[in-house]
Figure 1 (cartoon, helix red, strand yellow):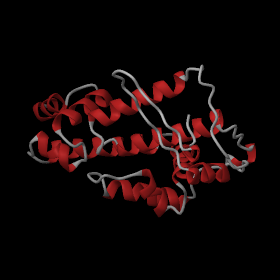
Figure 2 (cartoon, rainbow, N blue to C red):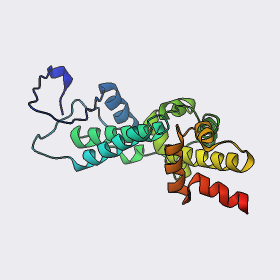
Figure 3 (cartoon, rainbow, N blue to C red):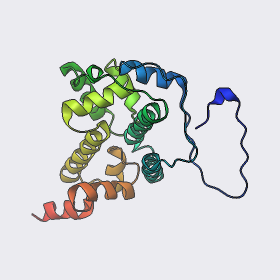
Figure 4 (cartoon, rainbow, N blue to C red):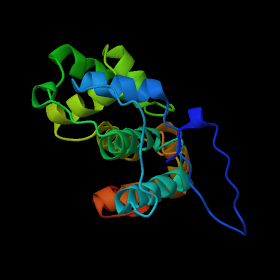
Length: 213
């Protein structure tokens, strides 16, 4: 954990793999303000301590990016918010006030968020995009959306894509590759993985079962 204001210099000897996170001071300030906490002046880390939580988050993040960063953008954003919260609380000593937790979205905000997701299934939609339409910061929006709907934004969007894919498979003769692109899955292989995981059958098998019935 390095403060860039200290003008750090590092030397690595031999091959290594690394994931670097850049945390802007403005992001820490905004996060603290949202939670009614004191500003985080710096992040401090005891160099002899491992961080299994951050290691797990990093593995999940890398897996999501390798699969399809475009289709997974909301999920990647959600992980980024989790990383920010972890840094602020674990290494910045931030302690949110209980009263700052707040509730869910206002009815108009929930409607607007869902409208945007439905209208932009195939786009590279980010949490920041949807949050801006709801007049909220990304972390506030993500937290409030889950409280209102019971699911995270990326889970809601994924279900919308699956539902639209089902509709297209039933109502059209479009190839699965085209349906995958129309519904925002990036490519057919990623579409097949997500659909199979959520539905319990591959898109092709699901389509055949209903056409034969």
